[in-house]
Image (cartoon, rainbow, N blue to C red):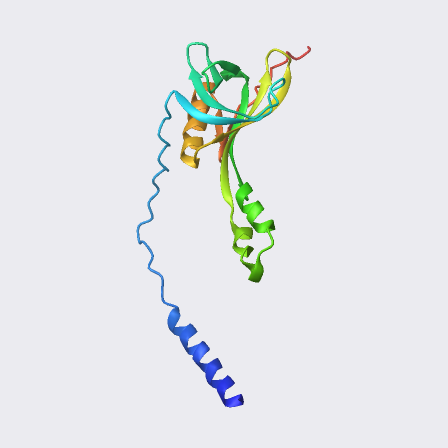
Length: 189
């Protein structure tokens, strides 16, 4: 028994040393900037998740860039305007990701099954991609945060970049912000 354990240990050590090999390194690192995401269509499918005063229900619809009126418009499935956020009211825009278990996986994992057949359902997760927008409501002077569930991270990035360009936001990390300008007060003589 002892002899078998020693042989097993030697075999494990020997295979571990052969598994490692030198990494190849690119001799000329490139300092190319990351490519900008493709500009989105004027209208993008989105799901409103909440955050606007007076609009508490989650809705599916579209986000539309209304350049004539300088605003981002959310329209429902019937293409009726639900609400809008003026470009100048946007103070920040950033991506967000949440991993959650889909409802079907939650149901499967809670159903009693023999021999642990439902255990794989515990590990099923889906990523949800959000565009989160901080804004200052011009009608009420109340700040708010709203989020929209978009199809994938490329769509989130392209919508966010387009909104940042139209709202004149500056990049900070993964998101964009509006820098506050401080008013110059005259000095007293």
